[in-house]
Image 1 (spheres, rainbow, N blue to C red):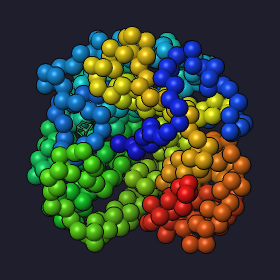
Image 2 (image 1 turned 180 degrees about the horizontal axis):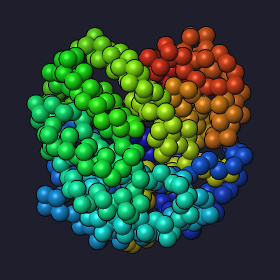
Image 3 (image 1 turned 60 degrees about the horizontal axis):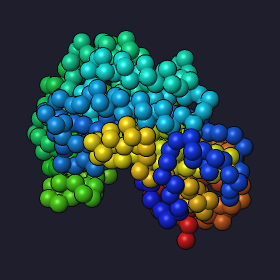
Length: 414
Ligand code: SF4
């Protein structure tokens, strides 16, 4: 559950991802990047057993309950990856994230094949972080031992709540007991586990929120992602909004979570992410530091840098269309050159989510623009008390973290 910028805008849209278009992306442009940012790989698996009413991800109910067209999809992913290689030629891949959807619907053999294909085609670091998302409602013990043996070394489990009533309200396919059983299985095979939890749920009280977080903390997993439930457009919850806790209660929950996770030894290092020392999510950190990522799979987004431009891509969204297009040689529905004027906002949208911010030099390194291009905005944010005045870092103050939208908006091009 990582927010990724949509591919939108008015720039001309070359539509091929393959070798033909590489020359286009290498042409002179408005920016000058000193080097390529670190590269990650995102793989999207677009099916779930059932669609949750709050979910705006590209996820579709599996055609036959938990049966998915696995072999055909893996063929399409391989074809997509092969078509993408000219854009990332020779660049090492530091992290892989297999997300969805529900990737744990893939069989053990299917996951093994996917990882073999990735290793065969990309120069994956020997110590690459390889994360897979899993849903407690699609969790079989033997499968998880095999996933680990295939090379997955981090699990992110979509728990959301341990409370049966709230899980029902969220339309989840699992109950609290299954959530606990899934964590037990995960910890038998993995030492790097994230639990996704949501708060400010329909009718949730502060005491119930505390109970959920205390249960999550009791497992001492390396990482927690604690999200405020939001009603996203184009979801069932947006059409039929449930009764949610008022803002004061939600703030109380947030403050309590902040204090309690710190007391338990977790560092709140990003808006929704909490980690034990040195266990931050490396893949997500690369997004927040405006690193590069190749995204393959239905509806996957990607961001790739070239010496004089930044390219954003989006694959065809619907699984059947994506599979057909990937096999026909073009999985990319939209590709666009990000205008230099938009890069500061895109960079800040990510970097300002980090409690420690980023070194100021990273702005030039990852946007190819000089830092003085945003000197007025930096001064304005600092004057308002939203940004740390230290010129060597770009770091939100506590006030800036609380009013993150206001801080980010300062960098929106007028
Ligand atoms: S399981 Fe996750 S990805 Fe699937 S519908 Fe529910 S929230 Fe969306």
